[in-house]
Image (spheres, rainbow, N blue to C red):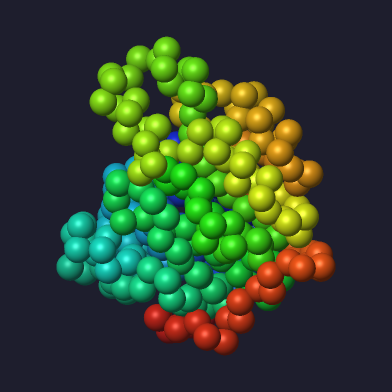
Length: 270
């Protein structure tokens, strides 16, 4: 599986998952022209579907426009579907927030995580590897650690440094929201999550770093102290790409869930 972060942060989020047979965009905070330019710069094909994690504009904002422009379906949870409106010409598939579903040969396992919108983390699997994705959550949960423990790589937000947030330009109500249990992860919380994962997880990519309240250097330093995995920070703009191969699970690691139970919500892509 190849994973390409096309954009990450409050200005827009978009991550492309490409397997041998399928190419799916998770979140669409880029408009059609910006997405086309980002794909061209990354030398990646256009997506065949969009999966939305939640209804905030930096994740959902352009899903309808891109879906209409490219004539591709948009997958979203029932709560997110109720919170947003897609153009009538866009094909919409709803997924349950805890039930695996398949798009081509990619299997998505969603999991609700705490945020101030109905938000899901995702485990994305093909025949070669499994990758966990969690951005926009206020605190790590045991269920999220369980989901990520059967992954080969994880992508998780490291949004803020508490000292920079306290001294930063945001008003008090926004600082409280970010630091709340339904806000975002601090560098230390992200490190705690990574430190709880087994050595099967060999790669970690930090997402959604605040430009005002964090820095890649601080986030990386904190995360690397907590894990033996290779840790990198995604760029806010400009692609960050990596290939993921499955490594043999260590003793006691959770076995990856079988894709045989995943519902095929759409027709397999050609």
